[in-house]
Image (tube, rainbow, N blue to C red; front, side, top):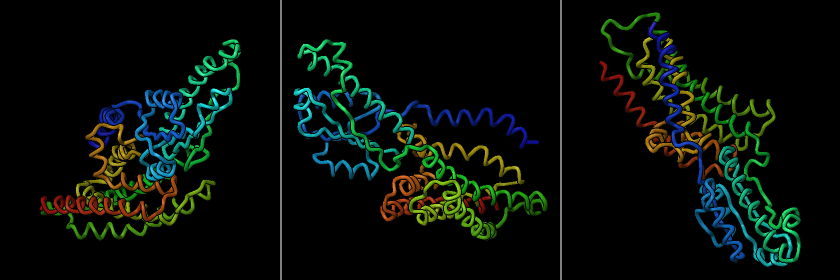
Length: 360
């Protein structure tokens, strides 16, 4: 059967190629950070140069105040904010411990796991240099100087996800992908089953567009019920929080509506019920991976970045992360998200119409 050949031959060939292409640029690097230097000394400038020279961190701005830095963190423009307080170098020269304040975003557990260790390594190297420079000058043996209390200590604040847990970060995104797959597969399975049982019409025409729309709208209450269960029942059942649950549910509902025209297009092309399951195998993981939820979209090839924004799952996952992980204000999140998904809804509706009427 052709469906069996697709599974046996297509999956081992196509799936590895698609997934590997998404990660072709390798490890995410140059994570954006801001440097607020209230000390402005040779020591603080040298520390900034070394942080910026690491592969994992890029200092993209030097705001005058911490307030400006916090605003950039809230807007997801940067992932780390580093503050050098006034008197930093004077404390070091007096042989006292100096403090470096660090606010790191944990919106993406993967990128946080790259940038923070890179900063820590730079501070550790500077502590060794400072120990030799300042303490050895006071007739303290070099080896003893290295073993003293670190000259620079970082005071870290993990933002948005204080525990750094991977599950609460990843699970909402997976659930949203499940909601997308329910829309795509259920409609394709419904139409495919009908055609397999009844056979195609004698004149070879596909189902009229309004018939497809009616079938999809008939499924829509079930999409909402399933989304409600995932948003309101799953988090308390497994003891993790879902901030802004009502607004997260709105994202699930918007995704179901924006995905519906794409599901109509696929259903119109479906010949039997097996196509629905092939769709799930080929498209569920790549759409999630290229959305930028788990791996930064900016690190993917340019054509993948463009392709990702053709699918409603990309803005939906971006809004979900802002609401469920960052706790951002719904008004600031949903406006741009709904605007993007409205454009996608119109484009996929046009594609579905062309698919139906071109074959008539």
